[in-house]
Length: 407
Image (cartoon, rainbow, N blue to C red; front, side, top):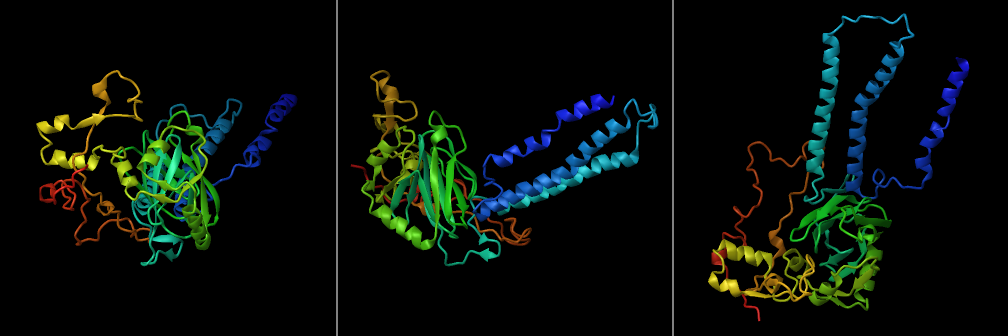
């Protein structure tokens, strides 16, 4: 009996050593020890949620082992009551404890969801460090390509491929889209992942509080080159960031215009980092509206025309030949000519990025910053196509100034 017990315990002698192997792998715990305030709050949410759940999991596991040992067949001293079927006190404990945990998790998640809304401008860059009213966030437009990342800096007038540089402790406002398939923009050291989708624009507000080099990647499978769809992230002091911008403006790559972009968006893998000295200021809006190609009608124009009743019979012939289609590789064959056409542009409505407002900055207080209006105050309705009265809304289409014809 003693020998069999020793043999059984010897099997588990290496278990403590095996549990230490993950610590020896060299993997960094960047998600739980990030360099940005937003990611740190998200990591804290994971830790607190896990600890709350463990308050149920650990007792249940411990009681499972205790009951199995105490009421084993060999223990003749254990209470044996085969007719027992109910205990009010036990029922209260079984149901009340998980219910309290669920209530705590629900309240914690609800508050954190509002405070960490990626569409809201940051109210702070670090604990106890509020964003000053005169601080302008760094604007970065992100485009997920096959299989690389394009970053456009509209304030600096430059663009980069597979390299993102940001100043330390300065709020960053990302506008994110994609060229062909759905991707996901993710820098674990800075903030959670945000989807990048063609024909749509998502947003992310974040900050990096520590200088250093980090890695970003796509966390959504997007094809053959997905594994190498990574980019370098440089968190630089303000002075070094200005030097980086100056180096980009002196880059021999020159101007990133629409023709250069059309070449860049074609599928390629392991693309090296590149800096463009200048960029078309309307390129990102053209990417979002799927009208980078010359003469192609933009989505916002098409929706405006549809809202006004359509283009009529004349619009049937307002098509042009597709030379290359990134979605289905059309344009490279003579078969099915009609399917290789796109709607042509007959007007050019200026694209105003100011009509896409962000949310209101949150109050960093734990419970009062949930984003809800105070009792008795007028609630702010979300901006939709039905209640929008902006200069480019469907409601005001009939009152617009005359469109500029495209030559």
